[in-house]
Image (cartoon, rainbow, N blue to C red; front, side, top):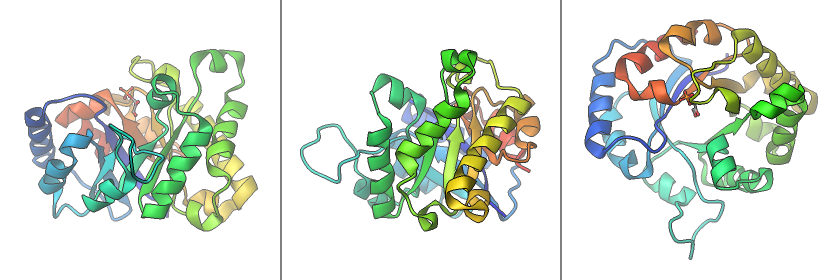
Length: 253
Ligand code: 13P
């Protein structure tokens, strides 16, 4: 059974104090996770260590960095390496979020390097893909997303992709309050799984968790997560509110 994941992406929000309060409130919320479910927190770099201390002992709570460098070490001012993340016990890294692609010019080729460097360090990427509004309107979203997967992931081995995590985040639904319908999400998730299956076989494709991201909230999580190829969500705005995110975690199937 593949893993079901509710992942928070706090993006560039919250002070240290507010981050600690949010986590305290979440830990005090009634959250039920079955053995194949996980809550993952993509927190800003400066808070990774302290949030890790707060979730210590909570077996199904994990941490994610929101990015990492494609270089291993050296004179890259301002960058954070996978070895640094590993040394502070961060298991996941969000790779290729559309905001990184758009504002920091991260190409499919650079993202392939980031995925590789994560694997070398034993970190688990949460690989993001998804199309902009004009691509959706032109009806070419399937081939667009397929190309993102091909150019950043298809050099990997079947063994590496087993249990891999992908987040499909249509850009037109991020922070807009405009959610993809559960049918649109299911359609793309099934497409992604088919593309993976054609290349790696159904066993590998069925082991990959595909999360949906884009205006997920407590009110729509259950319906979206209820789709057969949706294995949870990557949540921005609603993950900053303890009551919202705890309800989203409890919406995992
Ligand atoms: P919102 O949930 O705020 O739409 O953001 C989605 C997202 O970008 C998560 O990575």
